[in-house]
Length: 366
Image (cartoon, rainbow, N blue to C red; front, side, top):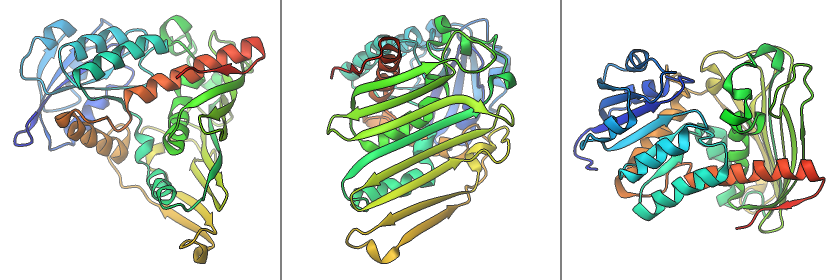
């Protein structure tokens, strides 16, 4: 994949959840042409093609798309039960892949894709753009400089509007097609940040999951997890469809505490309903207190971010993630949100379900 020419990218969708990922490609000068593929009859290939003026090819078969010899990479938005077999074909064809979450109903199926990508030296990763939020980036830099000292605990929370605001007949609430509920569908954004900021694996999980909404569904609508990391540090994670206000009402939060400081990251607060892509452009204030050497003169620091507007799904955070993915794909470097992290998130969710069912802590083997 040469840096001297624009990229040729394949874009696969199997369910039409979010055609807007193609529109992200429209904003990137690195991308020259796009070939879209409706992998199932759940997707209108013409609607998919309509997301970008750079679309030059339309397919209704993944195999036919992958017969092209000029593709540099593939982006994919597929239903969880569809995703692993599609990605196996993509990486087996020698192509890097950037996929929408959660990308599988089971960790074992996604692990198989990760192993093929590793053997072939291919970049594979998820569209988890909150790693690019300025609060995340600011805290990451502070952690690298020792601002919190030795981190002891982390706390994550992802709450969304009550189920009464959603169409619960969709596949999101079918365990055969979605795998899990709130934990993997929306909770994954927050759980990913917990793992990204802690920079180590979870080795043990205690959890309670269940269904507390009056509207009953076949997947969990509530989850409370206690996490033990490899080093012995601990964390908590909470997710649920619990908020009045509307489908796009969120309470999304990360907190970290260390021996020399703490940080508070309120990504989204449930003060008003968001819509469209606006939740990724909310003005946000990040707080950090540190007594570490070189930081102690600042007291409680507060940074306020006003995120630039972008017309695409995921906003400027998605644009930057896509750019870094394509840069990594040129050399076979790890993706911004590597596939191994997606596998581990599913392992944690599976352990949480097992813990809730048995009333015991569940270990996750390395």
